[in-house]
Amino acid sequence: MAISSDAPIVDNCGDECKKEIAKQIAMAQTVDKSGEDKKVIFITPVPQVSKTQITYIPISGPLSTTSSNWYDAPGTDLNLNLKGDYGDKAVATWEGSLKIAHSNGTAYARIYDVTHGIAVNGSEISVTNKADFTQSYSGNLSFWAGNNQYRIQLKSLNTFEATFGSGKIKIVY
Image (cartoon, rainbow, N blue to C red):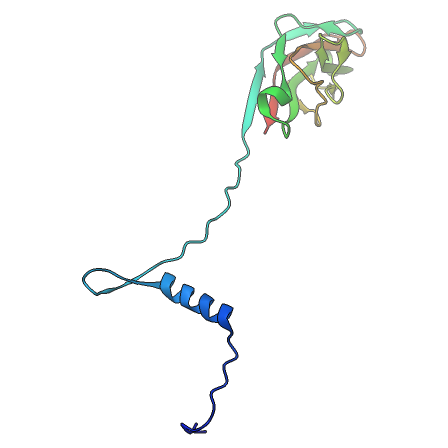
């Protein structure tokens, strides 16, 4: 279909449309002093994705008890301010290797909040009828806010020797 020079030209692009087209053309192409065209490459910024970090706090052993009541494991004290040191999104778990003498009974370990005089919610781990060190894992721990002192406590279900080999608190932030 041919358009005659006498036919009226219909312009559906208003002033704002024309300004936007001119702006895009100007951004897409520039001319340097030599008269050569230069292409402009548009780079869309990519939002920064924060990388998850993990920190481990080691807890040394071995430590043993035959007590059927919670026993404070010497040398396991540590201070921790979870949210203050690692941020509001920090999540902590812990793990430890435990065994019970003669593969008879259950060995327990937990983290005790010395500052507040309570066990840390979710920190109790155990192994049953295992004469060799066996790794046991907690769920998420509920540490109280602030800089608090913690220690490991152990106990035996039936007074056979319960041994904590070693462990670590894992902090993901």
